[in-house]
Image 1: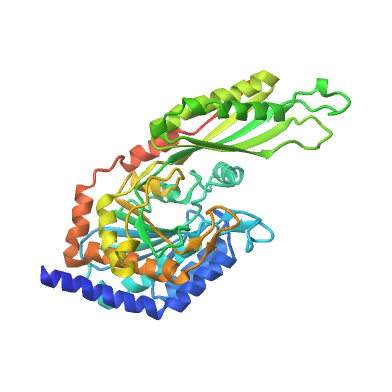
Image 2: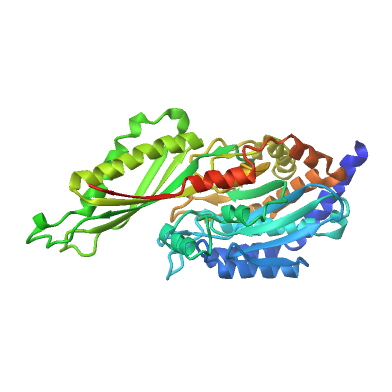
Length: 445
């Protein structure tokens, strides 16, 4: 047992030194990505920069996976679990942010740029031959596109053209078989707590996405509004109907519904005849999502009926609810305590936001940790990275240390976690469930 501990300690020390040697380059790359944000399935520059760093680190890459994804794999040549360490390539669209792209409005207000940094930091540490020699199994470093579920119309066009089937990157990775032989997945996310903390998450809401179009009849808004059918009024009534359902949602389902109007009409002088909306329906369970969706669809039809409009409802599978593996979390805790102390460890409670790491958690042991070192609200113009060393270098070491703990000593610990994990779904069951959410409906009032 003492020799086992010594092996792990030695491997961690070597990995940490390797990461420290590349610290400036890793932080510089993370800042470069921060300054050049790209939204989902458009991350060409970010993917290229990521692949270039991997190659300079001696890794062979596969590129253009699910359009823009990048994968590099380390194989020890000895049997053991296959771990995926992931980072997300994409940004959000928040034009008000100080470093938002002037043309697209893209901005890294969820900190995915530091995910790429800490994933690559882990790759630097684990690819040291002296570390790799002490491990069993294999490790893939996966830069995944399109975690943020935005620009739904654009992604639906990609789907209609056959370039993708699902609207998020990890869903596409699963569909394409990129996770077929992966046993464990790890990822570290930014958290604007301002604390030097490394805390694994517990669970997230899942989500269904809808694109909605209300069709009315145009007419002169001042001269003859009685000849028109106001699609914007139908949309507004539908949103009021959704809001009035709030008291019917059960507390344990943690329902969140948030629609936006993406097109409100063509001209102020014309009765709006073509109004579009996007919305998410979030809940802590699949059944909770389905129950809330029934009420949302009723409100959408009711808005159309009241005004005499037509409503077209396109439903897409969003994300599965996530439930992260506590055994992985406990393994990560040891790394967190080593790196930031007891006060910086712990758990992030259930979050009503959603992530496609939830989809991964349906099929294998999965961990998503949160690293402090950011400020402001996520998804807002106030979000900033305040501690690059913590978010990139320390978080990268924590991922590397966790992988070492799982794969050292003939990978006994990692293999035990894999063998004891009771997956909620097989991959075919997952894909069937996801596809079951997809449908189109047209209803005339």
